[in-house]
Length: 267
Image (cartoon, rainbow, N blue to C red):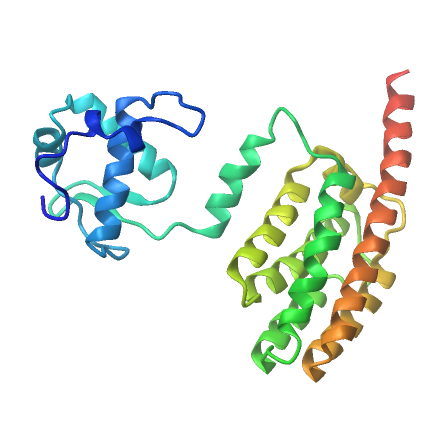
């Protein structure tokens, strides 16, 4: 197996076997780390085949179950995929942003962030996303944003359509995040959107039949798109900031109403 020192034993690699807190890593985790290094040093691209299981077992002097656990961990992370049958094996995968966001969202499963927590980040990041996109957005990208707006630019025909419209409003911002030339900034913004989609309180607000802020949101979004098209950086930053402040105020106000309604139903 080229690219890895054959004399190196993962059990002797302290850098890999210890976390920053000094906790010893399990053997499958150490092997997974070495496999990541192999992918990097060999310059393997998505679709490239990894060594066969027998070679990995011999290389790491590990039990079959240990190697399979390491491979499963990498598959869960979205870094590899497996294929059975003729020509099958393990292959390098291209991790998707959505998959990474779903994994990170699981971290908050038992300790959900509040709406205020999420909007504190949105207010800080999304104006900068808008500022970076000003003057760089293409006609095709603007058309994509406009097609999303058409999902909610009219009153909903019922509760189901209203929910779809509210989610589509969030999709508009996710599309801006995906277009952001700073991939880390875009990813962090998208993560906030993903947390909102999964937050039970936010979903309750989206499903609430009370009148929404659709018209006000549309006004902000149309003004934002105009500033992006014209390359007005400071206007884009300001409009996005105002939009996030408005959205936060609306969501927090609806949260109180929805919370009271739920408590009343329980009595």
